[in-house]
Length: 528
Figure 1 (cartoon, rainbow, N blue to C red):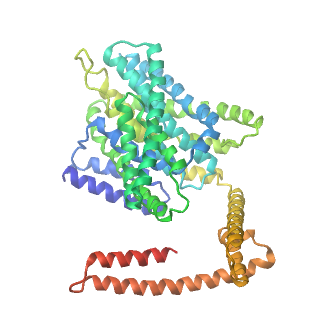
Figure 2 (spheres, helix red, strand yellow):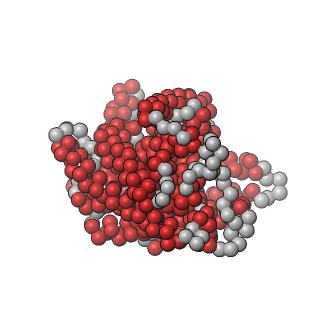
């Protein structure tokens, strides 16, 4: 098997792991990691030969962009304090605790190298957390915190990692310079992200075509990441900024085809790239096994100790931090997304899995320092990092669904229904306002006006049937059932038409381009 065949196996596994995970009740990222481990143990599977400095630029931009599309800037802005308190600050605490323990148990490990280890294992993976937690029916506030934590933790951890690596490589360290680099990195990233977001929004208006616009959204995250890194900014923060800008300002409510096609496209990209990323985590077991040759007991003991530190620090930090956030939240009128019970805090604690970013940072550790000497304890750091990744991702990922069921943590379905009903009412009222505006400038027949008024009301009822009054609800249900029957028959008619058009494609003299254009017209009709 060569590298290309291995890539196709991972892509196929990424697709199959989704229905397999649903059937087995296991997260797809965990299954892909296990698949990678199995492949790594097979003698005919080659070692992964991806340059370490390309892993982050290749994998993170599309994954981050896909994750940000599921949220909004206002959601982040409303929850800045919980994210900073429960997320970003935790990276510093975890890094320091891991560095202290690693320096104590690994003989001769320099402080800067220990801090680099702490930085690369500190951030929970946003892809792993949202992919695992998002399928368990957790309360939206927990998923929001996990998304914000994972996304912004990567920014902090990567900057701290680069500072620690630079200290090891150069042999010098300045706290003042490190703080200045952190601030400048954030400023440059935000500036690049806003500039590219604004520019991409303008280019989308010029392109017009949905296919071209969606293609541009695939290029923009990479451009944002690479440009920010070239200017010594945070590529991760730049991608976040660009994605948040586009989600706010590049959305046309009437551009239905672009929105539907864009959602489908990014769901596919997210599934494939996530699967490949977690498959690579398992495949990199080759390197860890090579490092541990003859030293299994010692290295496994070190890795287990760091796993315990990472897991315990998260718990011991979240308990008081959540309590403090709840106290501060009670004094404010602004609604924030915070854990509302000890059960939700426990679920949030156990959701702190490490993943793609930690793997990429571990593999990106330089081989030598500026003085030409080997990077101190590089093999040991890489092995410990992989131990933490495997220990948290596999152990916590496999047991999180059972823990959620055991604690009874579920989404607040009543609250979601209430919000859905509110949106349905607003949608129906907006449709009625527009109808009145049309009636003020056009002379509509009374019969048509009444029909359109019923259609405006039904817009809301179809979204949330509960918004209709009791005496009208049954009538609406009757019309909905009739409409479904009409649509079913119309769907069968359109299906017959599509089959006939497709059959014409293979006839002598048929122009495939014309056939495809007619077929696309029928497909669009099917969506209405």
